[in-house]
Amino acid sequence: MQPDLLAPSFDYRVVDGLGRARQRGGVPQLGGAVFRAETLGPAVELAHLESGISIGDLHGQDWLERGSLAPILSALASAQQQWLAPDGQRGLILGSGMVGEAVLNSFKIDAHKAALAAGFAKPALLVAAMGELIGNVIDHSEAIGSGVAMFSAEAGRFEFVVADTGIGALPSLTRNPDHASLSDDGAALLAMVEAGVSRFARNSGHGNGFRPIFEKLADMSGHLRFRSGGYGLTLDGCFGNRIARQIAQKPKLRGLLAAVTCLAPKTAGR
Image (cartoon, rainbow, N blue to C red; front, side):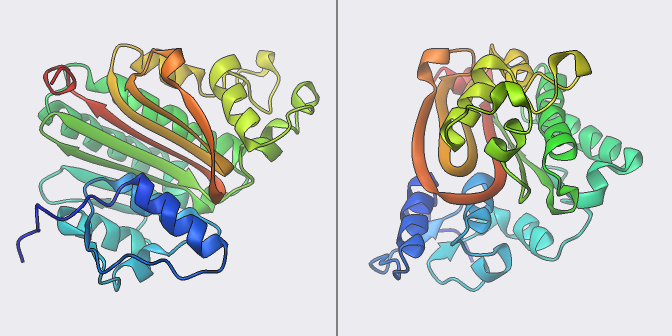
């Protein structure tokens, strides 16, 4: 079946609306609309909400057209440790695959090839940023087995999503006495981004938070969304623009999720 290109996009606004309704115990009213999935992030985030819908259950929702993302979402639902699309444009690793050197390196090589084919002149920067997020799952989540890392590439665009259902940003940071005063998940996300802090002391070699991600992507543009607990930090535009970062309350999410869509220079300038 050909996708309905006129169908509204299944984006984060839809996820926020579904999450809030389900969090209140209500039944979301979609008015008969059918949404078209274009990026991985919204589906993965919906599955990680405390009142969300699992990836497996999304398969049976008549309001969602999964389109070209159907194979990778099916692979995620079936809990395959590693998966790569036949065309090499999409791939994932789960859980223990993140700490297995051979599997992780294979995944990074696949992502590098996909980004290069999508038109990015410096795919190594994208893979390195994704690697920083995978390292966060390993070092901070206390639930490596719940981790997932995915990428999706097409001409002019490269998306990667890394998520877990571990302890989340605030409980992780407040293990460090220097950050015990953080008040909520939003403050924790801002601290990880702005101050580059983590649960470990700076001299431990693990104390840079999300700052290295922004350093690697500083000259690129696109869309970024970090989620933990009841907050989300978002950025649309140039990743190096601190002013563009926004923090807002969101439906409660288990663990931590980072979804980044990078646009190749010609696409970003349109």
